Amino acid sequence: MDSPLRKVLESGGWIDSDCWDEYNAAVTECGRKVQRYNTAPLNSQDEMRAAFSDITGRRIDDSSIVIFPFRCDLGFNIRVGKDVIVNYDCTFLDTAMITIGDHCLIGPGCHLVTAVHPKDYLERRTGRFRGEPIAIGEDSWLGANVTVLPGVSVGKRCIIGAGSVVTKDVPDDSVYAGNPARPIGMKED
Image 1 (spheres, rainbow, N blue to C red):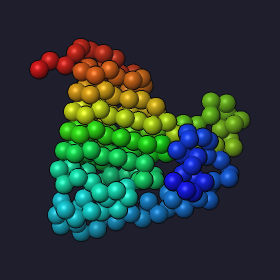
Image 2: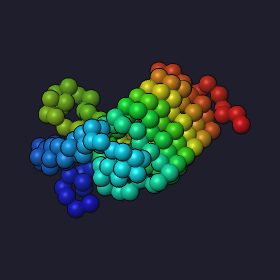
Image 3: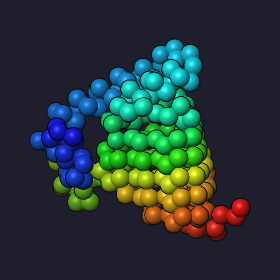
């Protein structure tokens, strides 16, 4: 990562007027790639994977698939493991890194949101923002319309119930549901 924007993103620092031009250019470039992914006549899963790999800048494994429509803001902060299914109409706001472990299922309409804005309203007016990374552990399943908030990690082998809003880290082998998501038990085999 050699650009000023990528250095700020990697460090978790605030994106402000020093990086806005570069940030806006990156969002525009990603938007073109996402639009192609969502609208071009992609005739096979191989073509879908190639177009998604163009968005992220890294090859997605042949065992994984991201079904369109899909939305993200930068693309290069997304890592998808092996044997992953990201279902229809998901949005990944990747101001910070989003990592999805192997063998995960991401239900339709899920939102993984890393962007954080200042709490003080006057500071929010400046337009500053930053990101906090999200990690989804291997073998986890996010039901339909789950939202994962900035800085949250979902452990390995977890199930998050449909419609949940995950505001805090989820330990391995847990079942969470609700808004905010709460433990409703441990995963049974």
